[in-house]
Image (cartoon, rainbow, N blue to C red; front, side):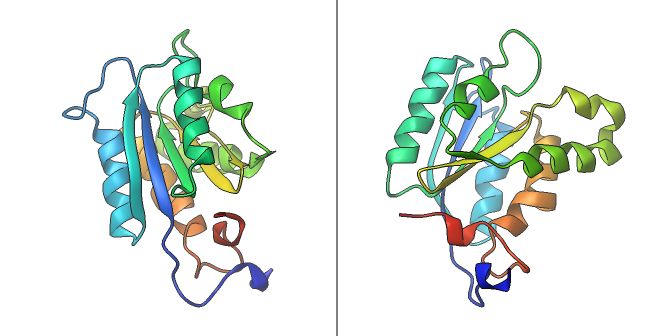
Amino acid sequence: MSHLSVKEFKASKIAVLTVSDTRSEDTDTSGKYLADSLIEAGHILADKKIEIDCPYKIRAIVSAWIADENIESILITGGTGFTSRDNTPEAVSVLFDKQVEGFGELFRHVSYQEIGSSTIQSRALAGFANKTVIFCMPGSTGACKTAWTKIIKEQMNSTHKPCNFMPHIGV
């Protein structure tokens, strides 16, 4: 699989969506963490939004980003739990051309080391739609740090071996 990585770093144009009924730009620590981290890693913040946990509004934003040639990757924080207001998996999964089953599995495995069995309440997921990779993670800043530092950052690094997602994204 070494053909799926390259020697030079390639920046991805990444959009960040915070799904929350209560957060604002001033209180959105998770979205801010992801935006700051992707920029620090050398990527480009293509867009950033906060939207209430309404499946149709979430789907509309993500659909527009999937169709936007200036966005190659999407990071979504929030709405992955089990309350009646947690709708991110239902809103986004129907848009996937392919699901990345390993992301949710690995996130829960890594998260287990940090929060124990409570990790089973995370419905973290990822997939591809129109050559756009989409990662959905819980809304806590700690969960975003876990997802970014232990999984996403490497998979969004074109120099990571033996393989990464970068050859699969873009138009």
